Amino acid sequence: MTTLEQGFAQQRSGLFDRFLSLTRTAEKRNERIIPEDVPLHLDVPALPGFRQEAATAEPEDPGHRPLSMSAMAAPIKPISLRRDSIYAAFNTAMPVTDRHGLAGRNSELEKLVEAIVVQRKHAVIFGTRGSGKTSLARVFGDLADEAGCIALYASANGEADFDSLFRPFLTELPMSSSGQERVRKMMGEPLDVSRLSALLVEEVRERSILIIDEYDRVQSETAKQEVATLLKLLTDIHSPVQVVLVGIASDIDGLIAAHPSLRRHLAPQRVAPIPKPELERLLLACAGNARLSIDDDALDMLAGAAMGSPYHARLFGMSAALVTEAGGRDRMVLSDIEQGLSSALEDWEEMSGQTHALFRRILWEAGSVPGNGRRMIALAAVVASQMSAISYERLVKLGHEVLGGGSINEGQARDAMARLQPALVPTPNGELWMFEDTLAPQFLLLMAKQPVQSAPPVQTPAEEMRALLKGVDGL
Ligand SMILES: Nc1ncnc2c1ncn2[C@@H]1O[C@H](COP(=O)(O)OP(=O)(O)OP(=O)(O)O)[C@@H](O)[C@H]1O
Ligand SMILES: [Mg+2]
Image (cartoon, rainbow, N blue to C red; front, top):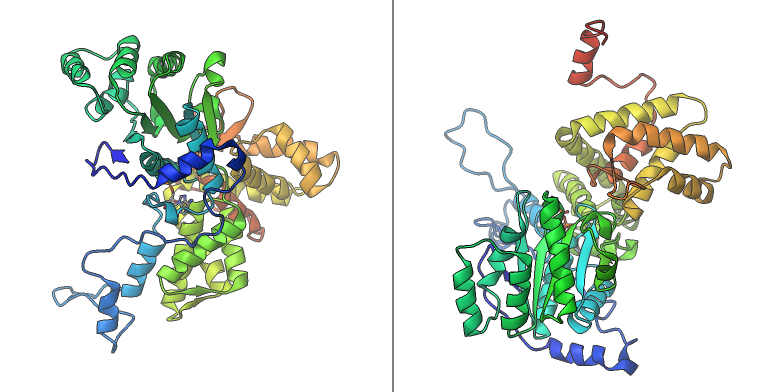
């Protein structure tokens, strides 16, 4: 796949042609094209200067190799090669680019290939932050390349308009020579929907797929309307170009204002939580790359805390692995996971102090009144992680199914929604609510599992200042 920002080497093996012919054969539709149980081969980026081989070259001190610190007054903690390989193995910053490293997404990949490559639909890939949207889109792009398409990948930014969204693709698309001439002439003028769609339909010579990541960042309503119109035009005139929009949303409406007639031609692909066994396999593979093993109960706790999110699985796994490493051991045990989760929570508090303070306060308040509403708040976290968005109705329904408790759920669901309100944003149709920080539900659940403090939580600096201002002009 071609990534527009990074330049690229086109790789087309043709291996996937076999796959395509299979999908086109009706009687073989039910056959699994991507086997369920392939071993995960994770990308572990090599870190300059700190190769794992170096550790074996220094048997007298396998754990630590201090940097030269003679010039420093007080030595800082030495950089450990094992810590280094833990950071690399559990890396949370890099999307997966190799299909063999993508856990639990076979059916999503198959659906995307069927909808976009075979049925020539446009697609919308959506999910919460860190759910693996970019990883899925990139691996899909490579599969599409192998199937004989040209997949081009770019990311949007907040200021993007229609022109800046599509112009970067123009020079990379497989265009006829007259098309290239038209593109050159269009360089001086802003792109508009009808001219771009005419160009794509008349001049693009091979099946092409334009993947626009981070589409949720686009602010301009006009740009979004124009993109919807482009998709509709391309569909109506059987264009060789399909568009895939990728971004944070709880449903398709969160990303695109789709006209009903366009809806039929759009394939919605939710990036759902990864099933626990797949997440466990991912964690085992990451630990293996860091030369660590994990006890069964420790693995269970780690995968459970991630609630289907590969980002949280890697983050929590990394935190726990660092605890194991600091203890000079190579087997991760339950207490390492407990400590690792606390330390991940502390790091999150540093980054998201306001949301953390809100959660701490509402959990304390809910725990200190009769009818303990903490369970309902924790359920809100679980529902948000599994279904992206929450609502009073969802909490009442799931409250009955999961917690039992009868009509008490209605009051508690109302209370939980009201308490969580400052951390929520409405979905575009206004019916549901998402956590503004879509990484937050896993941390909220961790906090809800902590014992209730007997004293009210300490105020944040802002809360302290507000208390000092009490009495000034109605405050
Ligand atoms: N299926 C998967 N298997 C293994 N690791 C995954 C998978 N999906 C995502 N990851 C890992 O989780 C982290 C987040 O993935 P990714 O960047 O693809 O998510 P995202 O939804 O695009 O995030 P954002 O909302 O921030 O753009 C990365 O470290 C990535 O390697
Ligand atoms: Mg992404």
